[in-house]
Length: 109
Image (cartoon, rainbow, N blue to C red; front, top):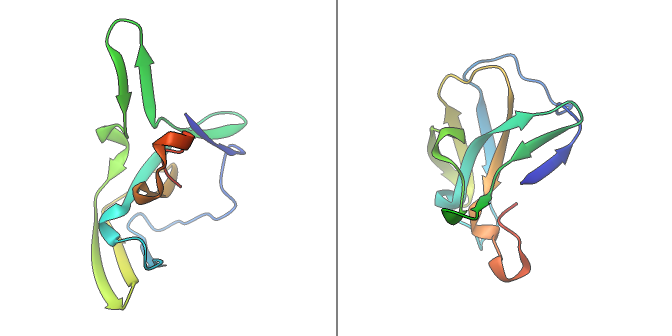
């Protein structure tokens, strides 16, 4: 599991279909950006990035149910407008899957 300290983010959004703008470095593409919901705990927020089991084995990657759909529009080189579907109350994160380095145990940023 990946963790963020604190039960909630400081940035709060009331709009249920917010629009975001993101500028990506040259090394990443918009196809490597995923919007995910986080599991809120009393002292942290979590995202499961892999699972291990003695019977089934291990699984790498994000669970389908935490990934949220969004539409993108490129406004300028590497600058994107991201329009989300209706999001419920909760904690969300833009996860960069292209930043993974399995050798170092890093699943993304």
